[in-house]
Amino acid sequence: MPRNSPPAQPPASVATPASTLRFASGRSEAASAEVAVEAAVNIVYGNLPYAVMMATPSDLEDFVVGFSLTEGIIRSGDEIRGIAVSPQANGIIVTVELAPGRFREHLARRRNLSGRTSCGLCGVEALADLPAAEARAGGATPITPAAIAAALGSLERHQPLHRLTRSVHAAAWCGRDGTILAAREDVGRHNALDKLIGARLRAGHPANDGFVLVTSRASFEMVEKAAIFGAGTLVTISAPTSLAIERAKVLGLTLVCVAREDAARIFAGALANPVEAEAP
Image (cartoon, rainbow, N blue to C red; front, side, top):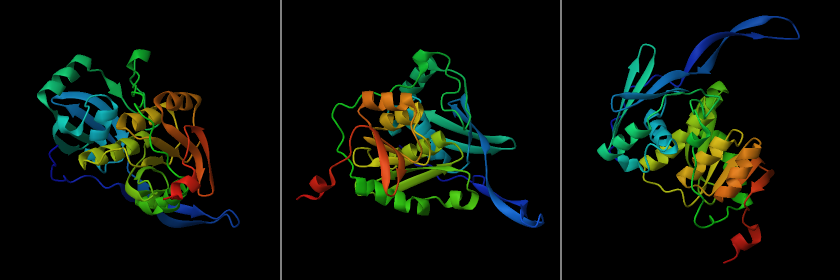
C-alpha cells in the first residue's frame, strides 16, 4: 500500500499544571505533569463517516489500517489506496481511500459506530455483527517461556508515553526470542492493538513468527483482533474474561495472561518446552 508523508499531528502528551499534596504535612506544592492527549478521531471512508474513536493522536495511519482490518473493512493492507489526516478544531478527521471494489463492499455493510476507549464493541447492534476471526488451519509454533520473560523485561523501554503520563496502554509485537520489534501506545487498549497491527501491515510484516504482548486484560475483542491479524499467541499483563478464553480455544490461539517476568498463567494452547526449544 502507498506510504503517505507524515502530516502534522497533535502531540501525544501535554504538560499540565498540577499540585503535589504531601499527606504527612498536609501541604501542597506547585508542580506540573505530562498528561496523555485524548482526541476524537473521525474515521471516514471515501466521503462517508464511519466511526468516531477516542484515541491518542499519534500513529494515526497505523491506527486506521489496523482498525480497518480488525473491523472487516479490508482483508489486506493493499486495499487501502491512501490516508489523509486533517486536524480540526474539535478533533481529527482521517479519510481513508479504499480500492474501488472494497469500497463498494463497504457501502453494502456500512453501519454507524461511536467508539469509546473503554469499549471495543460500541455500535454493534446485533450478535451477528460481532467481529469473528477464522480458526487457524494449523497450530502456531509455540513460544518459549523465556521469550515471554524477555519481552516483559524490556517492555517498559518501549513505552515512552506511559513513562511520561502513566495513563496509556501499549501493544507490542515480539519476535520468537522475545525481542520487541514494534510497539504502539494509546489511551485505548483496542486502539493500541489496532495501531500495532496497522504498523505491521504497512511495513509488510506477517504475523506468523512471533507473538503479541499487551498491557491490558484479555477480553473477547482483543483475542479477536489478534486472531484476525494472524497471531498465534497473545500475552496480556492482566487477567482474561471467560469469553476471551472460549474464543482463544476455538481459534487455536495460545492465550497467556497475568504475565510477569517470573510467571504467567496459560488459559488456552501451550508454550514450548524450554528443553526441547534449546535442542539442536
